[in-house]
Picture (tube, rainbow, N blue to C red):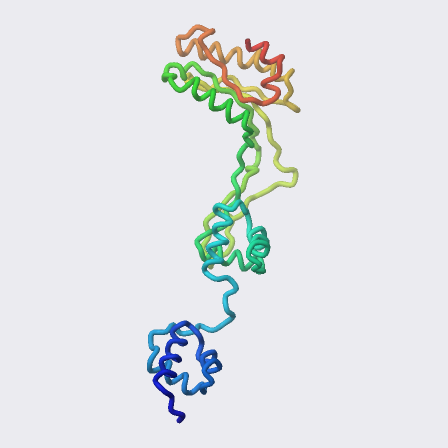
Length: 259
C-alpha cells in the first residue's frame, strides 16, 4: 500500500469534511479510491452519508428566494417564480421544481377567495361612512332596515361542496353531489331585515332594473318600514333604510324617491 505523508492525510481529511465525495477527493489528490475510502472510514466518521440520486437543482438560498417571491415579490404561481429565477439569477428550472421547493418550505395551494374590487374612491367612501357611524349606539342601529337581493337555488348550491373520505374508502353516496339535467332552476328575491325581524319579501321575475326596484320600494319596503316602526315604537321618519351601491340602487330616480 502506498504510504502517504501527514500533510497529504490532513489535506484529504479537510477535503472530505467540506462535503466532497470520495471519488472527487481521489481525482483531486491523485490517490486511489481504496486509500480515500479507508481514510474516510477511519478519520471522517461524522460525515453525512450521500443519499445518492440526482443532485438538487436549487440550493437552500435559491429555495428561500422562491418563497420570498411568493410572500413578498408579488408572484402568484410556480410558473412566474421559475421565470423570475431565469431572468434575475440565470437559474433555469421547471415550474414543477419550484412547486416542490415551495411545498418543502411549508407552502401549499388554496383556492382564491372572491372579494369585490375596491378602488381608492370606494375605500375613501367606506372609511367616511365608518367614521360617521363610529359613535352610534345600539338603539341607533336598531332603527336601520337592511335590504338586499339574493338568488335561491331549487336544487343544490352553485358553490363547491366537500365530503370526508378515508384514503382506502370507496366512493359512497354521501361523496356524490347529485345534479339534474335542467339545472334545477332558481328564483331571485328581494327582502329586508331589521331589529324587529324579517320584512316583506318580493320575487323578482326577469332582470332587476330601476323601474322594478322602484315598485319594490313603494310596496314591500313601505310595508316593512311600517312594521319596523310599529314593533320598535318608533315614528316612521325615525327608521333608516340601508342598501348597497348597486347602480340601480344609486340611480337618480331611486335617490330622489328615497329623499
